[in-house]
Each structure stands twice: as C-alpha cells, then as structure tokens.
Amino acid sequence: MKHLLAFFLVVALFGYCRERPHDNIFDPNNPARTMDIGLRVGGLDSTIVLDWNRPRDVDFLSYLIYRQQEGERSFRRIAQLPVSQTRYVDSLILADVTYRYYLTLQGREKESLPTEVKSSITGPGHIWMIDGYFFEVQQISYDMNQLNKRIFGIWLPENIAFHPGGKTALITYPLFNYVQIVLLDTGEELAFSNDFHRPYDALFNTVSGRYWLTDSSGGFYSVDPRTLEFETLSTVPRKATQIRPMGDRFVITDKGIRGLWLFSATGEMLQRIPKAPDAFIEDILTVRTDSLRNRIYILSRRPGNSKIYRYDVAGDSLSLFFADSLINAFDLDPVRQTVWVARATPGSFEILKLSLNGQRLDSVSGINWPVDIAVNRYNHHIVVADPKSRELIHFKEDLQEIGRFKSNGEPVKVYIE
Image 1: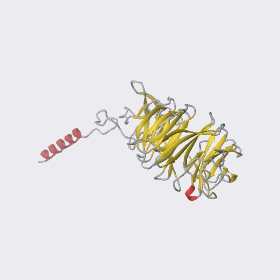
Image 2: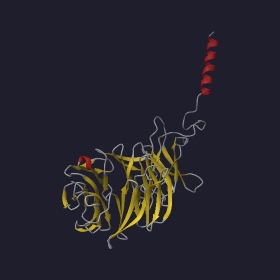
Image 3: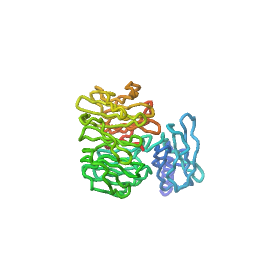
Image 4: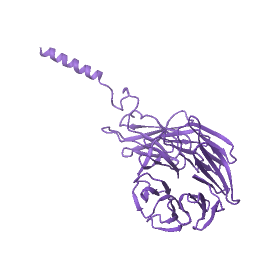
C-alpha cells in the first residue's frame, strides 16, 4: 500500500512539473510574447520621453532600450540603464519622424521578453488645452498619445497667458473675478487676486516684463508676473475681451464699441479700429493679427451668417475676406501666408486652408464640432479642439494627421507655446 501511494505521488508531481506554464520572463519557452511594465512613450518639445514601472520580484541587472527610426528595417539598442531608472529622454531624433521603441531586462544570464512596441513622433512646442468638462489646463504630448500634466482650476478657465520663461502662467476666471499665477510643472498656485471685476484675457508684454490683462467690465491693466499687483493702463475699452500681439503693438477687442483698439507696447492708445467713431463691427467673436502686413482679421458671427473681415491698419480699410453660414474658429499663419478656417458642411465640419487672397488650397473633413484652431509658429502645424468628439487633433501643414488625443473631458481651447 505504501509503495502504491508513493507511485501516485511521483506521477502527480511529475505531471505537475511537466505541465507547469513557463511564466518566467527570462524563459525562452514562455508562451507570452511580451512583458508588461507599463511602458509609455510621448513626444514633448523635440524629445521623446519613455516612462515605465519597475517590475516587482524580478532579479535583473539593467534595462535595455531598443529603437527603430522610420525607414529603418530593424531595431537597434540605444541605451542600457540602471535598475533604479524608470525614465529615459531620447533627444537624438528628428522632428516629425516616427520612432518605435521597446524595452527588455538584462538578467544575470539571459535577456527578458520584450515589452510591447510603442511608437511616437515629436517636434517643437508644447501643446496645452483648456478642458471644459474637468475645468483643467492640460498639457498633451506632441504625438497626442498621452496626457502629460494637469492643472486643476477653481472653475472653467477663460484664458491662459504663458510666461516666456516657460515655468509659469497666468489663468483668468471671469465668473469668479479671479486670477492666478501657477507653476506649470506642478500646478501649484504661486499668487492669486480677486481685485478685478471680470478678468478675461491676458498676454505677456516682453517690453515691460509684465502681463497685460483685459477686464470685460471695462479697461485693461499691467500686472506683475510674481505678485499680481497691477496698475490701470486704460479705461477707454468699455468691454475689453481679447488682447492680441501685433509686432510691438497690441490689439484689444472692445464689445462695448463693437470695434477694436490699437495700443503701443508702453500702453499709449494709438487708434480706434475702424477709426470713424460711428463705424462698428457686429458680433466680434475672434481676432487674429498679421504684423508682417499690418493687417487684422476679425471673425464676426451671427445666426446663419459668419464673416471674416480683413482690416488694413495703415489704410483704415475694412474688407470681406471669407463668408459662410457657420464659421466656428480660425487662425492665421502669416509666415506661410495661409488662413485656417473651421466651417460647417451639411454633415460635419471641415478645416479649410486658404491663401491670403481667399483661395482654397486644401481641406480636411469629418470633424464634429471644432471650436478652436492653433497654428504652431515653429513648424506651421495646426491643432484643432473638438469638444463634441472629445478630441484634440494634430495635423501637419499638408493636413496629414499626426494623431488624436482621446479626452475624457471636452477640449475647448488650444495653445502652442
């Protein structure tokens, strides 16, 4: 009986060992094709950043990083990193070229299974957006693969003005009469003020080294970038909303007079736009400037009737540039001499690429509800915010799509800094 019991135990143990799955990541007979250490890859301002998690209960000596450049036939090893490092910044890359990556672990005798291959593309500039659902300011990777940073707002932000140093920004909240300076890396609030009535838009004036801020209840101000202490520059704009740079001058939209004001970099009022006090522009929605040609483009929108006007500052002449039943947004690329327009079609919206003469150069359709367009001044790409589909869409200048960020919120404004 004892011999029979021993026989069955040996058979059971042998069967168990024979059928045991090869789950060791260093075992070449492991049926898994990849290992999961949470590899994330995202393009950010002409670099590609790789992040991953350190695996638990695994004895290994180092990480090995492999890369394949667009056009290359195979991967090659580009780095060997210590066990303590879980982040790698690849800066030896070309802009707007796709790169593919995977990692392995170097064991004491063998190399592990690879991670899943991740791809990315990068280029100049940081892409930021305002999220209208979560009331946040978010930084999105260049390739639209991931959310890099989140800055929580006290309510829905109206606008952001970035400090040229790249470390801080000013955010406005008209509904709560609130302005704050935040640290972009962490979202920490460095200063705040509720001394404005309706703080609306802002930008950084490099001549004065201070922010200029508009108040939609009247006037605009010069604001200290550290303390938010301010001084009044002018109370002439009755309902000052947008403020836009135009070379060494600044254009302020005034819904009170249904027109614009032009100011010098020192705060001197230069002229009303249009100059005639009885001339006006109805329902101004968006303004863009072309300092190279001394022109201002103005989107006026009423139900069933949208118009983009072109104003020549030197000649004080206003002309119709483009009209359609519904235009949601537009932006200007003075260097490439193009205007990007989001216009409605029967089934969806399309993004039009127009010359400065209004000639149609290119287009892309199938976008649900674009509400903002931003041109990347470094490489002339565009990024489109579409809250209806909850997407941020990145296009090259030829409208080849780079990627789409699938948001859980609602992208409503986009900035490229």
